[in-house]
Image 1 (cartoon, helix red, strand yellow):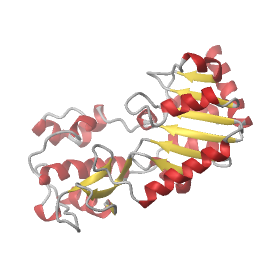
Image 2 (cartoon, rainbow, N blue to C red):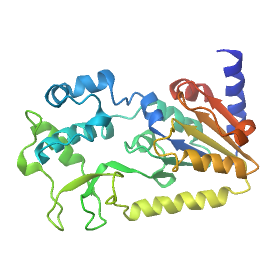
Image 3 (tube, rainbow, N blue to C red):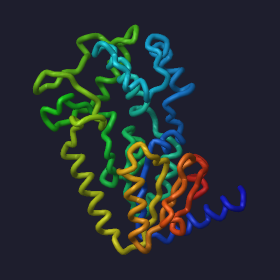
Length: 279
């Protein structure tokens, strides 16, 4: 452990220990650090047939592939969801939970894989802004109900052949009879159901209650894909609130805005290294 890194770790530990409340911002980089890579061996091992047939190179780009049929589309998506949403808990998330479980915390995340819940985080203290792989919705949002998809996804994976599911497994909206989609924010039809609005309200109440207190913002793996959800608001809070410190862990974009330099502890190291060292 080099001297600079050790000093930053000790400062971050003190900041977390002294904080009245902790707000965790979790981005894609956190899941990647936990082993949820969308490319490389993880993709090649589980999607070799899709790579060969369609030429898709990773799980992210594959979600945008223009599959010609719903049978093909759901063959891919069911396998993607099963791997990324219904697998086991990840150790890194469990370590993160151990760091804050006895503290006043809240999680805001752009991740849709449910890893915070699996690790033990209180569901009432999580706002998953971009949706949940574990839910499906009407593709045209004709109504605002979401439907659990675990049983269906597992059946799709079990029965698919040649990168297709049987036609009878293709989900149809129970209200309008049209197509269904995974509940992830990708267009104007993203459904925000009553649970989404409750989580949004819980986050707002937490922020209101934290005002004037010592706040530790623990930002993990948040880049510039959707910076308006976590990165920019965390920068604003750091700048505007006197007793707020930003702890940013980001191997690609660790630096804060200039105004927040003195109030930010930056780590360009992986969250897989930093989080265990903070415990």
